[in-house]
Length: 111
Image 1: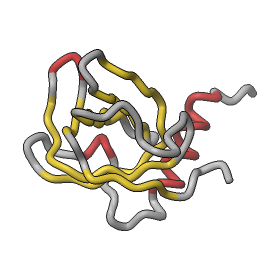
Image 2: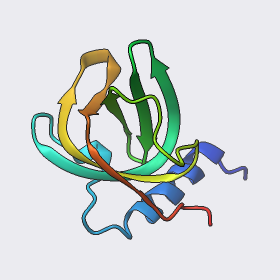
Image 3: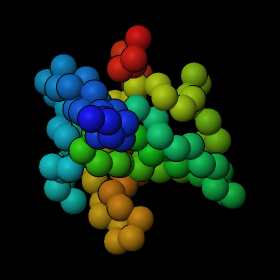
């Protein structure tokens, strides 16, 4: 029987995320409340006007960090582990966002 690679990856990410006691699963964060989430960088987008968008995923969902006035974060690349903390906003079709969060790198899941 074949295994769905997407389901396997999501399960791997959920297991990895569980080692961070201070981090909530993205699927459980509540808009307009502070949250700390850990995930791997899934997407990096530079928006005109010096705004950096970084989307992380943790196996339960995705969260986009919006950094105003920044064009990069030192060491940022796809697949790295990232912890984000801030007030979460629900932006309709765009999903969950956190603006100008505190952030730090964490151990990557596939090391």
